[in-house]
Structure formats: structure tokens, C-alpha cells
Amino acid sequence: LQLPDGHPAAGQDSALLWAMCTGTVMVSRTFVDFLTGLVVKGGVSKPPVNQPQKEATEVTMGGSGTSKKDRRTKNRFAALADDDMAEEEDSGPTQGTGFAVIVMNNPKILEAVQGAAVAAARWQDPKTIKNAIAVLRSIAVRFMTGSETHHNIRDACSASLEAPRWCEPVPRACLQPLVALCQNPPQPPLTGGALATMIGKPFDDFFTPVKVQGRWTLSPFAETVSTALQPMIRGLAKVFTHVCKRGQVTADVVQHVTRFAVLMEACQLLSALKSTTQGHVYELIVTQLDPGLDDKLKRLAIRTFVGKAVDPDPEL
Image (cartoon, rainbow, N blue to C red; front, side, top):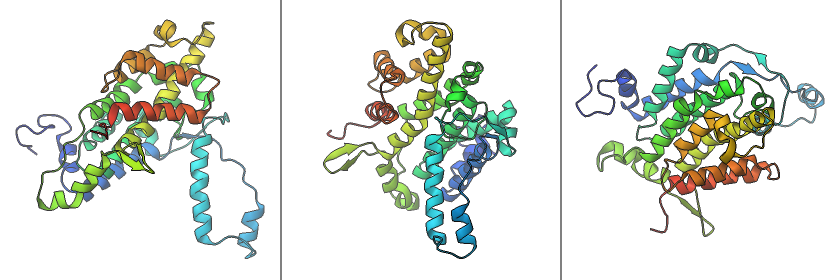
């Protein structure tokens, strides 16, 4: 397979994967769904939470149980709640099976999956970009938790003596591609033709801040990047706290960041974002280290940081 001269993937090992991604919109989405399944299915997960048996019994016996639609809705919200609570739960993990175990335990396969996700994020389709970024987030979380399946970093993982080592691949494999994508996002599709008609406006909307009730909010692209960075930034801050605690020093990112080289590397990468300095990044990390702030404010700090660094000024 030969790609034309000047193609971003020409001459690289990912040329075939690039060609798969840039064939058609549906092919690219299907391909990224395949990648997502490789890093999401299987691995380590916490034991299932014991659920009350009463409701299930009532439904089974045809009593006053909820409808199938209500149960599906409730299950979706329960899954989201489980992800949000994953950071606070410290129950021990159990080993599972699936593709993710193979991917995470084989450096060559993992490199291929990660490279394919980075390539897919260059395609001019919002859904493909969003799902490719989600793949990078899942890889980062698996790195930082010893291959757990959650979307967040549990306290038990960040406190582990192995946590600093687990985090070592995250800046290069996950954070650097995200920063590069923010610095140089995909170009809009060419005007005219079926491709522009199908995804031209959705593509523009994906990178445009949204005005809600007179206030500007993050563009869908910035929101996606923020969601991906949440577990990385917050997880690294938690690991840094435990590293400093074991070293019997204050968790001061300015004075003691050298104690955790991964966090220092992450700060350097984030400072390369638009209109961002090392001081801005340190302020963000200080916010994450503040035990007096609740999780909502810490998540908001990351969203605000990403919005300023990624979105264009909506007033211009």
C-alpha cells in the first residue's frame, strides 16, 4: 500500500492503519470502535458491588417492578455513578480476562493500538476524534492503575508503592499526543463534495465554543480533551501527594516536583499548550493538591485550564 507524497503517514509503519482511518467516515468510526474494545474489554476490575435483591425479585415475579426501558435507563445511570465513585472505593481488584490483558502486557501490540488511536485522531470526523481520544484516556488509566478497567484513579492505586512506576509511560504515550493534537488539530474538510456535506458543519461545530444562556462553554473538542486529561492530571497529583508523604516532605509542586519525574514531565508538556506557561500549569496542580477543595472544583479547574488553552477566543 503506497500513500501519496506529502501524506502525514507516508513512509511510516502506521501507513496501513492511516489508510483504514481515512477511507470513509463509517470505516473510521468502526475502526476506532474496534480499538476501544481492545483497551476496554477485560483486565483488572474491582469486585461487583452487592446489590439489593428485593427489586430484582419483584421484577422476576411480575410484581410492581419497573419497565424494561426504566431499568435500562437506571442501569446506564448506575454505570456512570460507578465510574464517578471509582476514585473513592478502595476494594481490592480482581483479575479478569479479555483483549485488554493481551494489549497491555505486550509492548508491541500496545504501541500499535496507541499509534492507531493517534492516527485516527487526525481524521476529519468528530465522532472518530472523540473516540480516539477516549482510547488514549483508557490506556492512561490502565497504565496508572496497573490495568484496572475504571475511568478514574482509585486512591488505593495512587497510594501504591508501584504507582510512580506505573505512571512512567503516560506522558509519552498519552499526554504528548493529546497536547500535539491540541496544538495542531485536524484541518477542516475541503469545501464542496460529499465529504464536506456530510461532516463539514459537524466538524466546525466540534471545534467551536458553545454559548448557553449568554455564557460561553467549552467546545465539544475541548470538553473531550478535558475528560481525557481529568484522570491523568488528578491521578498524577494524587501519586505526587503520596510520594511526598513517604518522603516526609510537604506536597509542594514548586519545591518538590523533582521527587516525581513523571509529574515534572507532564507539567512541561502541558506548558506547551497555547497561552500557557509553567506557572499556569503549577497553579493547576496546586489546585489539585488542595485537600480543602472538593472534587467538583478540581474538575472545574481542569476544564477551565483546557478551555483557555484549546478553544479560540469566542469574542474574536
